[in-house]
Image 1: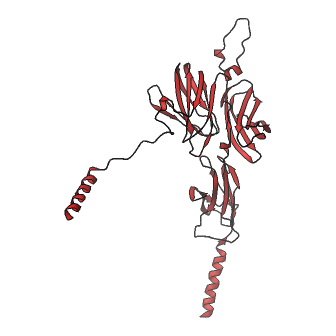
Image 2: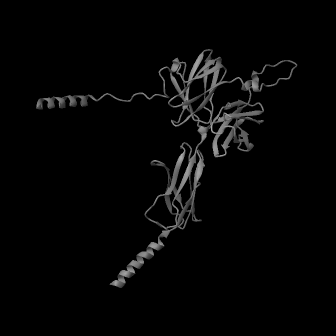
Image 3: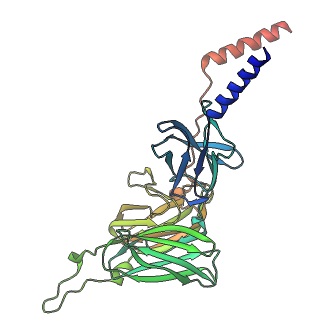
Length: 372
């Protein structure tokens, strides 16, 4: 009997050893917000075996963000990807969910920690996000935490090829920097900015061709398209804004369409009142692109409210207006927004009590008083 028991225990141990596998995953220690977390793994599991890998945000509480299904390939490896677009900065964790079907050896690695970095609120790009092709790309901004030092700038062509840098550009005592980069074509230019601590943010400037049909023709003289004069035709104003303290802009319009657009770097929201008196909310772009809207100009003053889409953001907003005589920024609501002190106040959704509940309540009160 003892021999049979020992044999049974040996068989169980043998089965346990045979069914134990090694699995190891690897992921980057940090990624920039908007990039993809690529999780690679190797294992001794048979090819074709599948399991789930989860991504959770792990700080004060654990929040499940996404689940991906991994399949072991013939080379005994696997890969899953987690895009971070729309996430927030912080500590995230990728982890293999236990299946109960397989046992993993003690030297297996089934969890990795990834830091998603977003420092875009430390810098504000104040150059116009929409510029006319004049041979020069104007890049300027303010890095609040890089005063009297330097930021590192890299500019890419619209096709992604390198145009400038990466090179250091000096900042003044207020953290302001400026750089003019020679260009010869229109398109969406990408600007990557870092400091000595690392990546700060990615920004975009849209360069458009000039409309030469508006240039007057003079007989006997060569026609030259205006350059910096057109760029300078946009007026602008800047102020610090947050969700709790939105910025208000008064734009003195001219006759015709008025193009209004924000600075980039923050996911801005623009609100205004149309000709029918209806409140219009514009939020079509992300943090890297400028929010814009075109309204009909009638020579009068039009009002705009601008604030960050994220409650945690607070930054300087620059609003630009083309075909306008001037623009003024303020934290005091103008008459068009007189009742607005915060962004997009939510209407009350509290409904009246159903009639049945009211009747029952009255009845119960009556019974109570009769018993007394």
